[in-house]
Length: 433
Image (cartoon, rainbow, N blue to C red; front, side, top):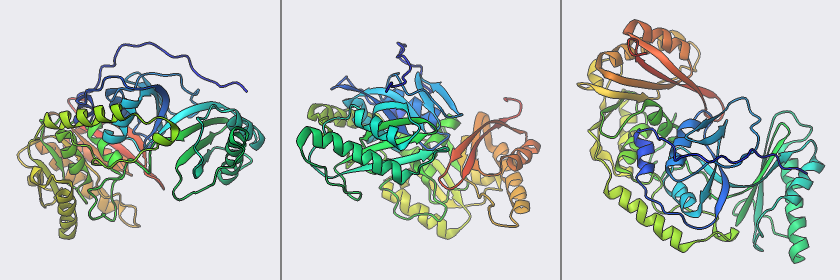
């Protein structure tokens, strides 16, 4: 069985964007530590370019990767990406820094094999022959995903891959590995996309998008990894004024404040699966901890961030989350109407927001008027050279509403939000477009 890999390329260190999210990653000084692994980071679909910039800043470098087989692929900051994934090579220090400080990714997996398969029998053989590390005699799990048209389903992939892992372990030790899907010590990830199979070991415990500051969950809460991506798309820097006029539970203002302060979004208690895979490195961990502290000491206190929300109950929720994140003193939070210019203050360099989607029946006409008024207010207070990034489900409605205000839709990305897709739309003054 032949593994299909692209050749590695030698490139100069990438020229990184200057947005606050990438700058926070760049501020962490990391000498090389430990072995270098081929890894992939999972990120919400549509967030790959911002994730690649952040990962490059955290020390990821180009690597041989599986031949991309999805419709959307590209290269950003030297790292190859495909829909939902960014590939690279990273040493233990860079991996630990990613687990601790990355804002735009949800999972990191050690890639051990990639090949072509057409049947469950070939899945078994591929996993059996994959150069997986020697797993400890401890509970394990297989997480399987299947995308595309195959004659089998994800549970069947998980079962066959689990049999292959146990066959390898039994041949080495004479024993079977116990299975624990709830609290496994090690996790083997197996993904089949069309005929492409990739096999890896998860390095994360849970999803990295989870944040400790979620004291209260908004009914339409935004994935924090997507919020960080929106800030990068806007090109917002920590020394610029930022407004979120539809702040909901305050995810965007919190992510902005934490990035400006260079404070890790998940705190210090981040779990990982390095030790069971023989990758524990106490010196690297101490180095990363010191580097993260150093970055925080040099963090920027941003100009007052502004957040507005029409519903008083939602303002209370937002306040709880700001307080839990320890950034309430950095955000001017109040009840306000996004359709009125005063909601945006005297002026701002960036507007980043997640307005109502209008998914309920009969909302389209109301949505059109809401977007028209809010974008007109945005245009009135947006500084020269500034940009507005909205995450929404009706980009044509927003583009039509922006035109009379003198704003043009200059960039649009399809963002995966789990059960449906939304669109990250960046607007700028028409004369700048």
